[in-house]
Image (cartoon, rainbow, N blue to C red; front, top):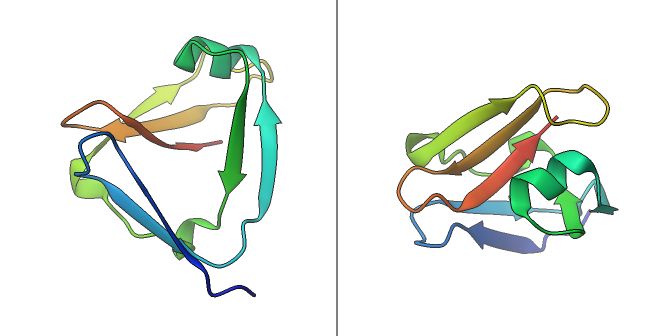
Length: 91
């Protein structure tokens, strides 16, 4: 397993998520749910195990999206409570 440490953050920097190790998967998404949530046609995504990242729950707000998934799956969309920058998504 890779020991590479990666950091992602929201726009204002209040939420910082660090992960160590190799991603579980990488993929391109063009589903209706993602297009609706972001306003773009295609995005690249990287998935890590949840326990590999830091827990920035104190400054995150989460929206439970029960309607826009093409598959009917509930998607949890987390964003910074300060700047509104999207940070994580979970199925």
